[in-house]
Image: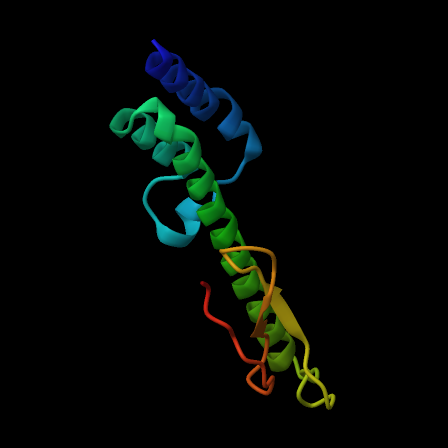
Length: 126
């Protein structure tokens, strides 16, 4: 009964709400394959209800991480376009702008350089 209700709720979301957003979830874009709602359906089909919440939380955390990676790529492309247009990059200006990359295991504690000149250590997660 609970599995059927959850399945109907997700399918309703996929059919009626998701198309209104006009975009696909970051997880599906970054890694290809299923989106978060597709992964949620898979979780519901393959695992007992007591495991749903932790698995769904992990999936949404992975989606957030994928969004951060996509945003970082977008920022880097934007910087490369500026460089091609003849504007100075952060290294030419004598400093470096580095963008935060949230740590998948907690709050944003790692920093990933936005340009090669940044001398920043990237701590592994864990």
